[in-house]
Amino acid sequence: MTAKHDAGLRAVARVRDVRERDSRHGLSTAIAEHAAVEAGVRTLEGQLAAQASFVSGTSVTYLADRRHALAVGEALIGRREDLRVSASVMAAATAHWRSDRSRLEAVTMLLERRAEQRRAERARIEAHHLDDIAGQGWLRRRQAMDEEGDA
Image (cartoon, rainbow, N blue to C red; front, side):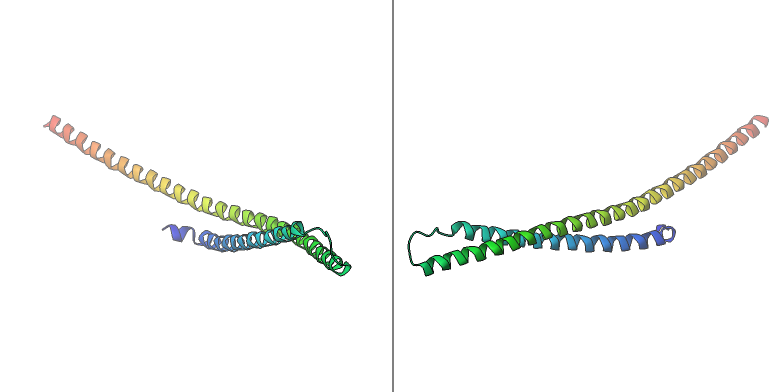
């Protein structure tokens, strides 16, 4: 009986559920990508911090060390920009998922509310029928008592 009453709303709920799952998957992907970029930033920061300062050696060694440090520094700048972008993508994915989740919850609550209203209506109708049956029984007993009293 419920499916008959809420077929359209159940279809909406199924669509909302699929959208929520898709956006949740997108969020988990964004979180994983952000974590990977963060790990890359930490790795490059570790490489830059571990770069030994030049103590002695030839000018060629000095230039090679400086070039390596500059390359790591430039890579770190690029990865930090990637980190900023991935953080904004993650924030957008979070907002999208929250929106989809709240829409799904709204439809689910509406379905539950409608089902509860139908249950309450059925209980009210059943109580009314039981009252009618009890009233009829009371009338029959009353009539039987009146007939016994007349006899």
